[in-house]
Image 1 (cartoon, rainbow over the protein chains, first blue to last red):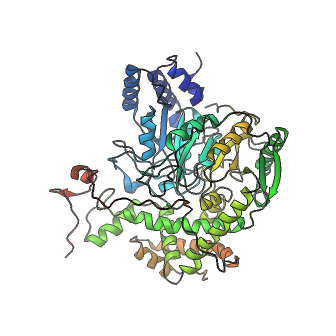
Image 2: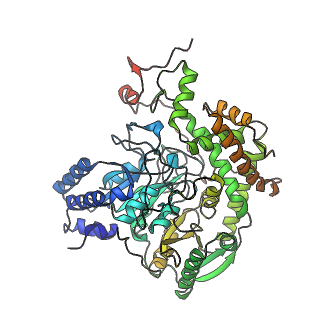
Image 3: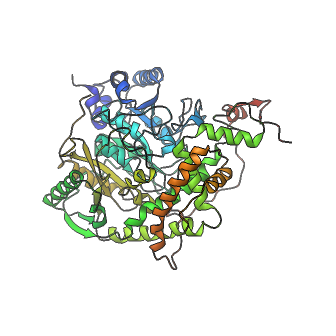
Length: 486
Length: 96
């Protein structure tokens, strides 16, 4: 029999519904895979083997349920998502030992759909980072080369999916944190339109930017998971009222035939490595041969997007992270003198350096005297960026761009200069400013590094169906990279 | 926009943020913030005359609901993660 862990989610779901594979066998296979690979990968902060097996056995006892699209499918979620009765830390010391009393909306949805939750994925502390090397607990290795970063901040999710530890994971994306690790680990990652997926129970970083989305091994798998987690939730006021669609059902026909794809010149300039550029151009050629029309578009404010994004994200982070005060939950410093001392010492002991850096810069750009020059100015540029995206997308069905300018770098090789790290997010973060959906998919292995290269499709707001349909057609024409030999 | 960030400015932001920073961190952050804010100056070159700030990309109107109290969690659940508690209350150090 084939190795269960090398199946796609869609293949597994069919096997489970047909009773060819039991839920317990699928869960046990993932737990074995975790046991065999986790020492090298460090993709998980918590594994609930007993709970997962018990849940799988209960499903088997009741029998397959065709109304549950993820019946018996083993999944993991990023540790920024609340899981009732399962530790949730956002990879920060300040939440060490925290036990949520409720499930995030998306975790409720996974469970209702019959998924089996295996555990929680490592991440950059509070989702602040691009390599999952900024976790307070451990570093995660890239399944293609464990001496390299898996990307971040949802790097644990991407590593688990790519290594076959699970069939799907949920990450969060504030400026690329689903798409960039998906690209670096060779899997599919989707940041849905802002408002498409409820953030209820997601530990907030930048609330006007944050969105939850799936990481999977195929576009079809991604569509199946999105159908489960999308939809309205009154507990998140930014959740859009329009109902979810059956995104997998939309993957019919050839999404490239007659499609128009835009290439924004600003995304193919200085700083892009030749192997990533070549992979993008090969994808463009494949799309053209399949009948797509390629047009040049322009996003002139791209060079201002990084500054815009970091000002807004840091401002929102400094406000969001004020809730960690050592009073109601989380870490409390010992032997404090008074209440003010309790706040200061609990926070200073609990937060890592990158988190402190962003809180302090956020406080700076919001402080009187600088608010207009930084925060308000950035919000004005944000509108210009969104308007020019909408203008570009009025001329085509999707934009095709790189995800990251480079493939996965060696662990520890880029930690010294925060500004240089921020610049690596150039191709992903402007979508979050505009609220648009972005799909990362593998485009082969880089000619120089031999590591996965991802490409990004950027779609119109709430047109996830169209975006996934184009992605599905393109995926079929791109080189298959298979699974890493671990 | 100022690009020189002093250690005193870093210390002031730390006070506002209820964080303590070591002397080493003050020097490190002052240097890094100077670099980062100098980079942010790219925004000053963008003409935003008459442009309304966009603070959220939400497309729908905020939903309203009845202002009715609702008990979603028990007191026990709410206190479950408290570092220190007593008789159904969060305990903090003496304030006055």
